[in-house]
Length: 194
Image (cartoon, rainbow, N blue to C red; front, side, top):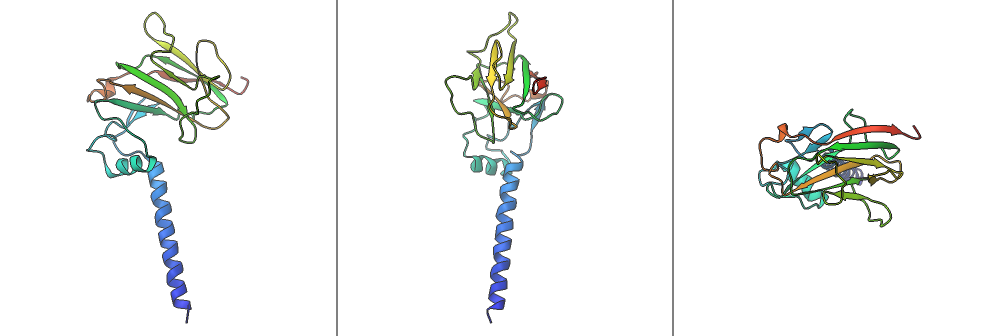
């Protein structure tokens, strides 16, 4: 007597559970379409516009992040180095070169999709006003868990991380010439004690 309602309820629970799970996986898997890849750096210039695809809009709503308009800035992220190896807190990296033309930029490392927690003792983020530059305007930033001389971006733990470089008030954000831009290189120096 209760067998049929129980089977219907179980089927509905499984269907709803799998539907919600697959939606959450799809939202975490991609920011949307139209990615621009420059070396290790990747940006989604259409993700913050009214013309964004439904996946980008859903990803933005799910993350609860305020994204820049096309004239305000552009966010680049790197989860691999220039050789395609995933970024890890047990390794040391060097970011060298220059950013595309921009009024200001910020750089920090996300761990588990979260920005760093402010720690007064460690440089968890850098920006265009605090970075030391060479005479030609280029910079070299060391990214590691242990202190480095010069420009150093601290990462904690042995977890994988993602670097986020945000260009603010940049003419490249609304430009169709993004492919011709050069981004800083992201090179792995060594891992462990090597």
